[in-house]
Length: 157
Image 1 (cartoon, rainbow, N blue to C red):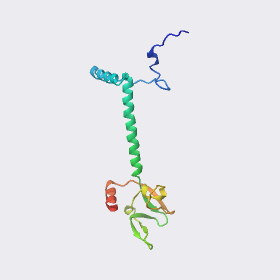
Image 2: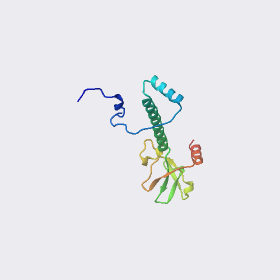
Image 3: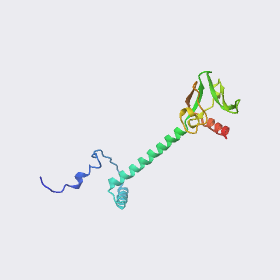
Image 4: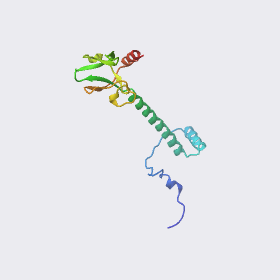
């Protein structure tokens, strides 16, 4: 065995724990390539490192945006409440009961049923919930229309 130095290009495929065996190729005009190379050099990178760095940044940003969208979707998850005992739907309205406690109102018409956010229902184990689901009730996922959401927001304000 000799101790001669290896050609640095031979180590090009070693990028982290696993060797980089896949390739990406693209065609650009020479001016664009020269611009990319110059910017990569200003940032102290080779062109392939610079491209990978920027593509990774874009993917990271997209992942964060997707997570934010998912969080918004979870926050904006709504339910209708069905009463199995009476075969009725809980409405958005409430009435004042005997002891000044707000009691839910029900309707047999599904079209008149209210819808409630996940954060409003104690049964869904959310902190700060405003109402409880009874043992004979079921929270059924519901996707309201924009008009229904607008009406609900006006109703609640």
